[in-house]
Structure formats: C-alpha cells, structure tokens
Image 1 (cartoon, helix red, strand yellow):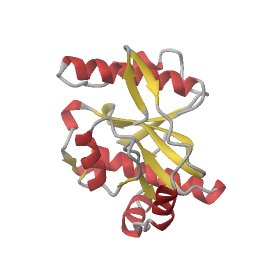
Image 2 (cartoon, rainbow over the protein chains, first blue to last red):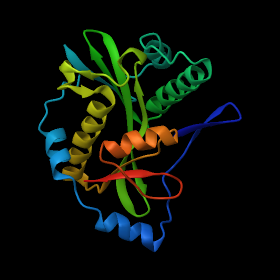
Image 3 (cartoon, rainbow over the protein chains, first blue to last red):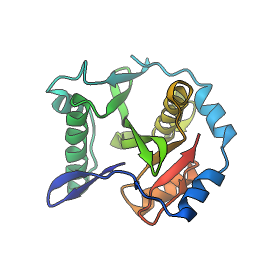
Length: 48
Length: 159
C-alpha cells in the first residue's frame, strides 16, 4: 500500500527520501531471505 | 485457468476502474468498502498515466485479487513498491490449492518478488517495499517476511 485517504481524497504516500544512519544501516545489514526468494522465483506465473 | 492479467498505460482504457470494480467483492463494512473503491479507482487512473502497473489475478474469470506495482526508491536505494494489494472478500485468509496452497495475498507478494528479481537483473534493485494500511496488516506482512524500517511504518524485503 502506498495510498491513504485524507479529506475524502486518495493521497499517494511515497517512501521516505531521507533515511537516518540507523535506517540505512538496517537496510544494508538486512539478511536476504533466500528461501522466500527461491520459492517466489521458482514458480511459473501466467502473466497475460 | 489461473492468470495474472497485466494492465499498463498501453492497454488500460478509461473504463478500467469501472471494469475492475465490476469483478470484485469489496468488504462488507461500508466504510472499508468505500476505501477499497476509492483505492481501486485511484490505482486504475495511475495505470493510465503510466506510473503504476496493475496485475489482476483471476481463476476462470473469477477475481482472486489485485496488486499494483511501481518503481520507487527508499532513501537512495532503488526499490519496487507495492502501491496497492487487494484480495477479493470471499478469498481473504484462505489458502487455495490453485495458488500452491498459499493465501492470495502471499501469492501476490511472491509474484511481486519475482518481478522485483527480474528488474534487479536488468536495472538493479535493492528492496521490495510497502506501507501497510493499518497495524493489523503490518503484522500480516511481517509474517510474510517483511521487516519494519521506519517510524512511518514502511516495510521492506531485501532482494
């Protein structure tokens, strides 16, 4: 989701452009969930 | 047959919002149903611009769910953003055999991971990101593998 409603209007919410050093480090140090990615990418999706 | 119908600016008509809404079952709660209607209409307009790509998950013409994706960045890191995810009311919380016994939301998230990995190979991408609509959904996404990043509640999966 990147949408919310304010004053009866749909507002698009963008991800933060400025991250704190702690947030940057958290992103950089995050582990990759190889099991999840393997499961997701080994499936055949029928995109038409 | 299970299919993900892809809508981009090149094939989305001005009626896309009306057409998609005619195939979905919204929440029974009137307020939530209205939110979903607003979001689906807005996403369909974004598809026409073109700032978003919409995938409509169907099984034999029965709508299971929707996912809208756009390229974005979190801080300086290029990311694929889930703009909107919707599961048809009948199928919420239910694992389906046709989806490899996954819930529709999990299947759509894993599809987003597949797209993100494809883009990563072509143009570089670091994260799949989303902002849950509420705290309850935050827990659901965390159980799918997302981690919480900021006090604004953005969640991410490292690719």
